[in-house]
Image (cartoon, rainbow, N blue to C red):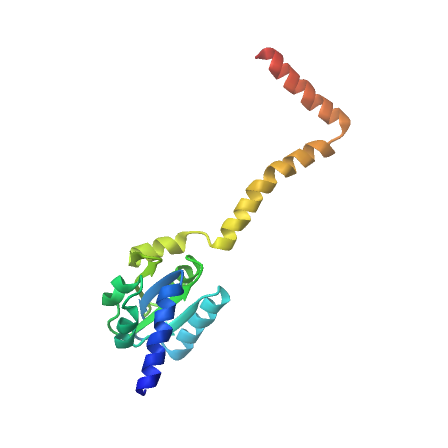
Length: 172
């Protein structure tokens, strides 16, 4: 690779370290090309990316970024998985690591918080942003559904509910 190509790669890595929501650093020694491609496809499905890194160039790219503290993780055959969603990349990486002994999560960073392997596993156990949105909509929608069910009940049932509430009020 010529000097211009290296400078372009350093610039590309620098942009990743400045803008990604989460970065997971992994060792992939022993994985075949089809296995790495499978990981890339899984990561792309959730909006993430996997890149095999050149450690010396990554260490240059880390200078001046919030991720500068993780430069010691880049030794040996290293790849990074990253996404804007702070849960997507760790979730896919952790799932892939369970299925492949040759894929090891070393650590990572979320915003300016340095994560060890256990921290990445903890992130992976959280629900994704879309799942959280679904749960929130369900919580908001739940009372409205209950009110609609009561309003759709026949008048006799509604009268019994009102009578029961009145009896509770008298008892109190």
